[in-house]
Every structure is written in structure tokens, then in C-alpha cells.
Length: 495
Image (cartoon, rainbow, N blue to C red; front, top):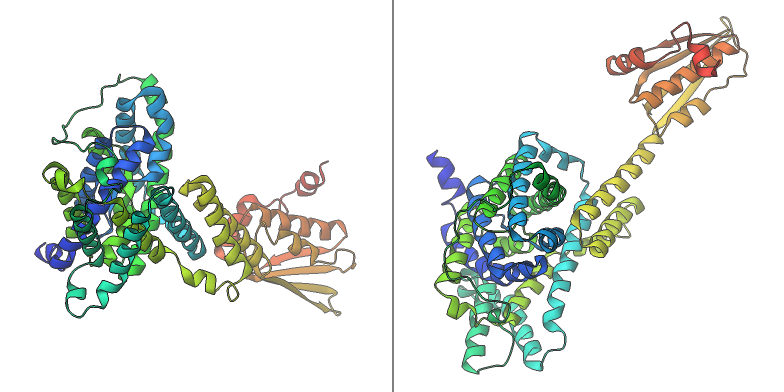
């Protein structure tokens, strides 16, 4: 127990505390902006970000990952808020948490094994593009001081770490925010600040059950939204966890992360917050600022609430240009530039999966659609590729008038047609042996192909024997094949 606490909480105290402060500052404008997208009061997003970050620090399966209110989730709840109001959103948030906990216990986190590296790369690149696009409103139709402050912020972020000793101690994004805030206040600059986004809450959130009727009608209203938010939330969280795993060279517990996200969303809904999930931008800020374990996530949530309630007069003076500079840094750091450099070296199928994932996510602003499109395309390419790894050799023995076909490779829906086409049914031999000791039959399409081959040979008057079925193939063939049943010919020929 003590070893776990030390490893997951106290192994990187200074780095986690400083990175948590940076993340908390970056969470404030994001939470307010996402509340605006969803059509709710800014405090709904801020309460959600505080609650989710604090709860996930204890319950999550990926130490050092930041979870809070997100744009991907906010986009899914717009119609619910518009048609039914805030209380139904809070109820949907609680139900979202329940569904995510159920997903964790059903071990659905293991499905991430089926997401290829090219899909993850496409997901990362699409998020980098969306993060950058989200900053454009702050850089459009503004005065020159905004551009100057943003450029200065980027200069601080990238040049400060080059300073000996001090540059390694303080996170450059935090230095950027502090310096630009001081400059903006001293020179009384007329630029947009965090205070212009909306009013910050002045009191602690209250623990209340959503004020909705507890009946089936309410369930049918919120269920479609809850299912969508649960799926998108888990997808974004698990994909982000994969990225943080790579950045920190550590592993995470995906099913625990599913359950943790669910518990955090239930807490958010009961404290008056909207549903959320892992945030790739803030998670990367956390890692690049030195955060590694659970203390950084807890610090981000606690400091966020303290700053909102106690330091609100300071926070409202932070120039948006400083936060834009931090998010541009995140966008640049998130994008996988190697994926562009490797376009010529990687297979065409890998590049297409990555590009399609990017296009779908950016076009729809829905991470689930992009991931589903990428996974589906990757599966099709894989099936097509594996389907080619099958060949059939034949030998003829004159003394016994026997033709032996040796099948090598995988027989399934993609290779079934090639399997049938490899036999010469018109040869007119007395005996045919189909040796499948080096083959594997995966599905009923493969079994159907074997049926057709055997019965076509028999129709031509040949005696057919199938040998060498491995245990798994024999199980599916014995269960679904009809070539060894008396009525086989009639069934296949439709008589």
C-alpha cells in the first residue's frame, strides 16, 4: 500500500505540483468555452472540470492524464439542453457514468487492441488540427497587440527551457502565462481576457440529485444522449491514455480507466456539472510540464477550484493570447510530424487509414466517427491482405489416380473465392485428397467453400477425403459443414 502511494502519488512531487498549476490555468478558458458550446452557464463546465479531475485522480487507470469537460462531449449535448434544459443534461451525465462503469466491468477497454497504430496517429493529428482551429477565433479580427502577445508567448514557451538551471525548473507554459499577464496589466492593454468569456462561480458546488421525473419517459429522453457521450468519452479517454502511455513509456489499466471515467461523470452530474472525459491537449501540457503521476491530476482539479473561488480577480486578467500560445504549443507538439515524413515509406493502406481518420474527425468534429471509419478501413485492408496469404498446391499419383491438394494459409470470407477457384473440378480423377493440415478455417464462409469444393468433386464422380483439420477448424467444420451429411448435395444445389 505504502509503495503504491509513493509510486503513484509522491514520486514526482515538484513536477506534478507545477504542471498541475499550468493545467488548471489552461482548464479555465476551455471549461468556459465548452459550457458556451453546450448552451449552459460557465459554472457548469468549471464544476465539471474540478470534479472530474479530482475524482479521476483517485479512480482512473492512467496516472498523469487530465480529464475534464471537453468539446467533443459538449457538442453531443447541445440539442438535449436546448430541448429539455440543464436538469436533463445532469441526469444524462449521471447515466453516462453508469454506462461507462458497466463498460469497465464488461472489460470493453480491451477493444482498444483492435485500434491500429495508423488510426491512433490519425486521431492524434486530427485533434492537433482541431485544437489549432479552436484558437482561430481568438486570432481573427483582432488588434496587433494580440498577435504580438501570442508571438511573445510562443517565444517564451520555446526559448525559456534553453536558459540554464532556471529553464529546467519552471514549466515554460506557466512562465508564459505569468509574464504576459503582468505585461498586459502594467501596460493596461486593451485585449481580450479570461474575464470576457463569462462570469466565474463564487461558491462551492452543491451535491444535488437532478430535478427530473424518475420514469421511463425521462429515461428514453436521456438514453440516446448518454449512450453517445459514453462511447465518445471512452474512445477519447482510451486513445488519450494510449498517447500518454507512449509519452511516458508506462502502461495503463484501460478497464479501470473506463470505470474511473464513469465514477467521475456521476460525481460531475450530482455536483451540477456536465459530462467530460480525458483531454489530450491538457494531458500533453501536463506531461510536457513535468507531470507524471496522480498528484498532477489532483493538483489541477483542486487548484482550478481555488483559483476560481479565491483568485477570481487575478484570473479574469489573464490575456487570452497567453492561453492561445499555450494551446498552439500543444497543437504543434501533438501533431505527429513523422506521419508526414513517412508517407513515402509506409504502405499505402496505412497512409489511407491515417488520412481518412483525420478527414472524418475534422469534418464531423466527432472523434467516434473518425475512429470507427479508421478501424473499419483498417479491418478491410487487413482482411484483403491476409486473404492473399493462401495458396493451394497439387500433386497427382498415377498409380492410385489420386489428386492431392495441399492448402496453406488462412481460409475465411476474403479468401474463400480464391480457395474454390484453385481446384480443377473437370480433371476426372478417381480420388481427391484435400490436405488442410497447414490451413485454418475461420468462419462459416470458409466452411461453405469447403462444402462446395467437396460436393463439386463428388458430382464429377470422384471420391473425396478431407484430412489434417486442426482442432479449432474441426470444431467449426463439424458444426456447420454439410458435405458429410446425406442431404448435402440437395441442400447446396437447391433441389
